[in-house]
Length: 82
Image (tube, rainbow, N blue to C red; front, side, top):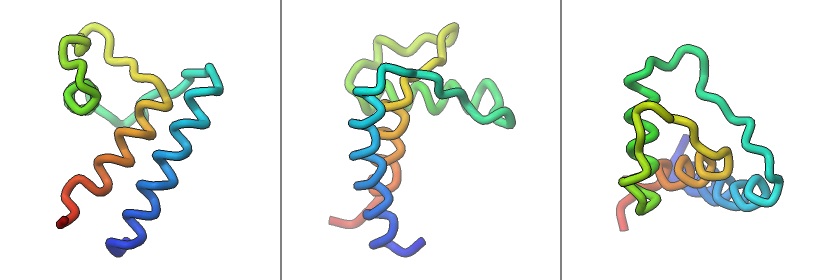
């Protein structure tokens, strides 16, 4: 992906997160090939980004689907030069 495509994907994911948030269905699951450590790191990163690091709980790594979409949108462009 080139940089413009990453920005476009980020914008699309961010808008999709709004659709998911109004859907009231949080049936998202981690891919089967993710380790518990990968899940924990992703979940911790999400909560740090979301401004609620106190919500991170190793015994509950579930995230809402709309939050995952918004966080992925952020991750796609976080290293973009200003």
